[in-house]
Length: 262
Length: 335
Ligand SMILES: Nc1ncnc2c1ncn2[C@@H]1O[C@H](COP(=O)(O)OP(=O)(O)OP(=O)(O)O)[C@@H](O)[C@H]1O
Ligand SMILES: [Mg+2]
Image (cartoon, rainbow over all chains, first blue to last red; front, side, top):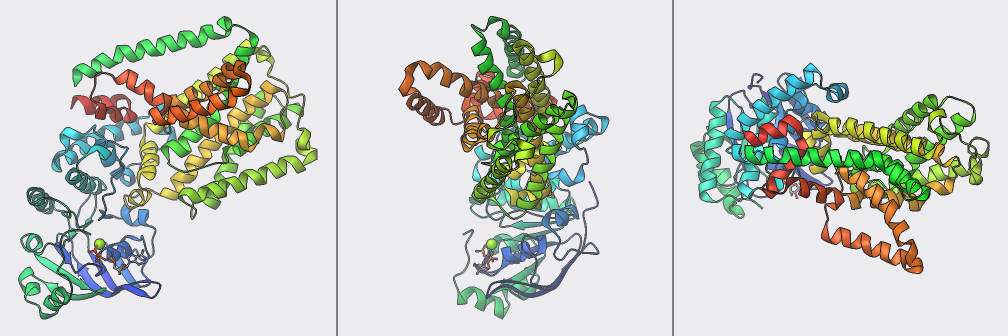
């Protein structure tokens, strides 16, 4: 595995959809090794911020620097190859591929073997396949899916898919992981398991940002919380600080308090 | 798990041996020259269908214009052979030109056009090509086509030609199965599964889509080359809209994204219409009914049926591991 920590610097990141400003001038820094929560009411722009950072929708204005490289406007696969990898709010595992294959897909940018290697089963091919299979098995074990290695992702339960989604992102050897509501739609037991998984990954050295609606879950999980409201970053601090912040309380009470998922 | 994997091996080997035996005996056992002709056409069609299997089945991209790539292969060979180039040169040309034509098409279209919008895009290309074939009379012979395309020296007889086609199909099948069971194959299938997620994992989706289309063009081109020499005569009508739809049907009846389905679909959809010929005016009705019932009862196609046959006795859900194939799937099962 590559070294996992890297710093992400956002400088005035803004994302417009036509007349709608989904992300409004967000400036902050997330350092290597941190575990950060990102919260905000429905429609606050959390997913949009991830989309802007990972290149799905290049920012309308502002700058994103990751690991010392200006990644603003880069295509998503290049950003991922730099080590900024995300998961998705709506489950996006590859349904017709097995769990093992889903994780193998995550190794793409870390492997090199090409058409010639594939046709003639060169040493490179064999070595990479062996390494990838070993690493994939470890990752499946980490996300609790080792016994489902050869099950199609489409046949997994919802909670299992959510974990596979994370496992696949972990396979991409990220220097920073952006998780979009990994616990949404899970039952209390699964939520607990997921929180444990996130903590384990954090202890393993992964830098992570986690979007989550459930205040209770996030408060017990992270050391730092960013709060978005209407695209703007309205608070940044420890869970305690944020919980007692006037603006945060208004944002949540002024509208529906968020529940899991949408 | 070990046990069922072990049980699968002899069954699979037995089946392969049986099919090899049938393939070798077939040209000598065919009731008459006509049936051999039908089977040869089935083998030739297997190549463009394999191309579709790669592009549509594995990479998940729609094309309704693959007959155009097939046509480019056929005309390349036809033109070169008529000018006296050796078969091997014409054959290579029929691989290279469609490869680059498909690549150019992919580079132009696949960056922004997605999903069902690929249907009008690929349809437009096939119209464009048809217009070229019809109007570049000096080069292509126009609507009346090219006559007198020779067969290669050692393959003039039908039986010999059958083995030539079989060899080409096997080579392409071998190469494609190795490619699918590799990093590129995983990338193709990831794109089919969810292209945005694939992109965010670091897969250059655009590049791999173009690559899939280019390889698909190569397969079609080889099929076209074999067809031109086999028929001795080609014209734009050979590569009509109906041909495009037939190729799609072969691909789907065989089972999208199933390489065994490709040859099964191509053979069956050549053989069945001939069997139904006796029913005269009912032929098309029966043919249509057959297509519909295959789709209703075996949405995974004939290839899916074969997989089921090979995997009986194992959990229904574990079958997919085989797509990763070989040692990987073996390890996955025994782990
Ligand atoms: N592709 C898009 N085109 C137009 N508007 C969009 C698009 N994506 C998001 N939006 C809008 O941007 C705003 C922020 O949406 P976003 O999905 O980022 O919110 P969120 O904080 O992730 O909400 P939730 O908690 O419900 O997931 C919303 O008003 C949404 O309608
Ligand atoms: Mg969201």
